[in-house]
Amino acid sequence: MSNIPSKKAQGNFSEVEGKYCVRDIKLAEEGKLLIDWAESRMPVLMGLREKYSKTKPFAGYKIAGCLHVTKETAVLIRTFQAAGAEVYWSGCNPLSTHDAVAAALADDGISIYAWYGNHEDFYWCIERTIDPRPHLTLDDGCDLIDTVHEKYADYAKTQVIGGTEETTTGVHRLRARQAAGQLYYPVFAVNDAETKWDFDNVYGTGQSTIDGIIRATSVLIAGKNFVVAGHGHCGSGVAKRAKGLGANTIVTEVKATAALKGILEGHELMTMDEAAKVGDIFCTATGVKDVIRKWHYENMKDGAIICNTGHYDKEINIPELEEVSVSKRTIRPNCEEYTLKNGKKIYLLAQGRLINLAAAEGHPSEVMDMSFANQFMSHLALVEKHRAGDKYPIEVIDITETQDEFVAQTKLEMMGIQMDELTPEQLAYINDYNAGT
Image (cartoon, rainbow, N blue to C red; front, side, top):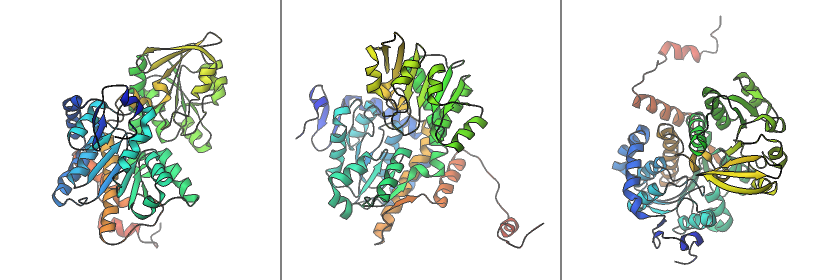
C-alpha cells in the first residue's frame, strides 16, 4: 500500500490492503462483546435494523463515515450494513477509537481505518474511506466533508448525493461553508435535531465527561470549584452533573442568554480570568479556540485540573501551557503533570482531546440510540429521494419535526411508557382561531 501510515509502520498493526487498518485484529472477540452490550441498549436503532434488513434500501450505495469508533457507532454501522449499504469508516478524533471495536468491525467485513492515537495518520485514514468514491458521507466534526470538498471537489459536486453532520462544531463549519458558497452537496444537521442535542449533548456529554475526569484522576468531585467554559447544551449538561455530585459550579460565557440560564440553574457566573484564580477543575465546552491561555495557567491554583469536552483540542492553548512550564510527565493514564515556572503544578487530561472519549467510553448507549436513529433516517431520506430521481437543495438541512417526534415516540414505546393523546375536540380547539375566553 502506498503512503504507509507513519505510526503503523512503527508497530505491529493488522492490515489488509484496501480493506482495513486497525491496531490488532485479535481484539475482535472482545469488541464483539462490547457491541452486543450496546445493541441490548439501543432498541430504536435495532428496530430500524429489523425493518430495513428486509427491504435493503441502501443496496448499491456506499457510505463513508467519520465518527468516533465506539460500541454505539458499531451498532449504527451494522445497521447500515444490514440495510444493504457498503460501509467505509474512520475515526473522527485521534483518541476516540476503541481498538477492540475497530477490530470487531474489520472482522465483520467493514472497511475501517482507525486506531487509538492515530494523530499523524488521521487524514490518511479519512482518505482511505474516500478512495471507493462513496455516495453518502456521515461526519462528526466536518473533517471528512472538508476533505471531500477541498481535495475532491469535482467528485463532491457530481457524485455525492448528500451527507449528515453529528456535532455542533461541524454544523457551524457547514453553515459557514454554505454562507461562503462553498457547499457542494446537501447535508442534514443531525446535531440540531431536538432528539439529538437535548439528549445526547446534555445528558450524554454530562455523564460521560464526568466519567472521563474521574477515570483519569480518581479525584473527589464534591466540594471542588468546578469551572465549565460554555453553558450551551454540552456545557450545561456537564455543569448539572458536577453540581449533582456536590461541586461548587462556575460557568463562563460570552452569550448573555446562556449566561443567564446558568445563573438561574444555580451556577455562579464569572469571566475566565476570575475563574482561573479559584477553580480546582476546568472543563471547556465552547467549540472556540484559546479559551484557556497562559495567563490563566499562571494564575491557577497549585494542582488545578484542566480538560476539554469540545470536539477539538484547540480550546485549551497547549503550546502556551508548554511555554510557561519547565517540565511535564505522565503521572497516570490520560493525566499529564505540568510543572510551571512559578513552581505550581497543573494537570492536563487526555492531551486536551475529548475527555469523555479519550479517557472513558463516550456517551451511554441509551442516549446514542436516538442520535444514531436520526443518522440512519436522514441517510434513508437522501437515498429515497435519489431513487425517486429527485434531490435535496444544496444546503444545510434541518431534521423535520415529524422525524424528531417519531424517534422520541419510538423511544418511549421501547421503554414501555405511554403518554396522553389529544382528543379530536382538543385538536379542533387548537386550530380554531376564533376560540377565546
